[in-house]
Length: 115
Image 1 (cartoon, helix red, strand yellow):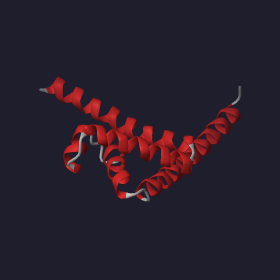
Image 2: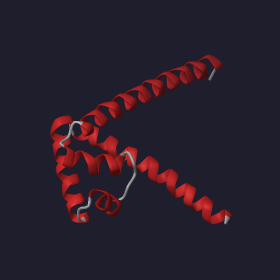
Image 3: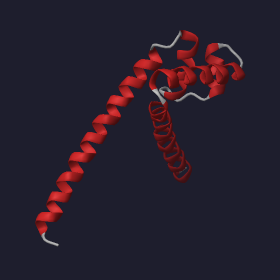
């Protein structure tokens, strides 16, 4: 294969990854906007969990409610968002949480190894 094919392939890949990043950012902004438009009782646990990375016990402490109520509110919020945005948008919430969890795990492993 000649160099021009490799260069064209690389350019196409770069363009595609740029558009994927733009699409991901667009989805993230739409999702955040939808979360922020939820009623307060549903918005608070969702925002704290997905964007501030609190766990359900921490959210319960902050909101002065039982952990089971946190889980119920988040379930109701997800159902509402699913109706409003569709399933594919909700997958982005998982990505937001998983990216943070992976970096936190790496940090914790590093801390344990160093000291």
